[in-house]
Image (cartoon, rainbow, N blue to C red; front, side):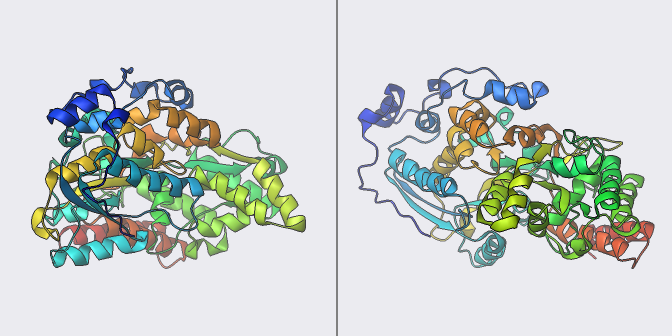
Length: 498
């Protein structure tokens, strides 16, 4: 997809803008974000489903006014950007806001020529790697949270922090900023943040003799509940995911690993060095043992777990043949959609599953409660690698717009959360909470989020070495201890460049 804006187009008339912004347009003087209505500071120490609901809708923001502080609204220039836009199967509201975002940016900055290209999620990293080798990259790129550090480490990205586009570091989650920090410098700004929740079927819990209104509190409970469900009902308890070379696997296994006190490196620490290896620690081995116990000892998870992604858990869950799984808030909407397509007796079962679907916090372990801090970040590519050269002001205008409280909320509508913390105070966040069931539960997991290690080798560690460790243990190719030691040795070799 390519969108272009005619620099001579009319854009938004001055009369439609606030007085402060009109002044900025006519004089070229940057204005303070104080043009936004004053709001209370967000207190992360109070974070909970109740607090998230309490602050939603308490403040209003003027995106044009905030971005005019960094780039005057009459600026003339050009910006190119690559990102992953909505897929055909995504909800219409996602497509609606994507369209409205580009229209709003062009109306606010009518003299910036815009070239935006949407690239399929699984193709974006490879296409960017190839383009940069030929000095044909975009000025701006939004990447999944695991992608940016690779390009920063290779020298392709410009340093970029919230202050560069008119915001403050305090407006973004510390965990999210870890994911764009490499070798002491910040190379991007979070656009959206994702944390998942623990989903279970309350009827299956009741039928198995468990409390239908209480999610398992600990990972030890998950192991025990999974066995009890399998023994009493003959169906799978927990939707274990262990597919090799698949991102779904670390997103579901790492919360368990961190909870038991393990780590890939030392990313679970407040000030990680990312130089020590933790996959052979007692905590990592305990987490691997728990997965082994469910798959091998108790046989309480799907036998297809070795080749499953989360997508393969959806069919047995909606059929009432799987009790527990980890997923996004959008999973509820997916189950409603699947139930709507079912017929006959299958529909009766599916409707019952939807009615009994519950979300809880990701279980805790002996060390902590943890979840993968996911999402996306936006970056500026160094000018020498950009096709046609760099226009830094135009790039910053787009990034300011994208990471604003308004648009970081709207563009994260169904399955994520605003990267800008002030997005939680917007009217749009209140609407999301009122219309997206269980969103408050998954949002409340954000303080427990841990990003994957911010090093160039992270994709191989997370998507290859850790799934291989699981496979080695679950298939009996190695013992739990051997599998953990083997994975640790592979990480050591990878970090050493061997």
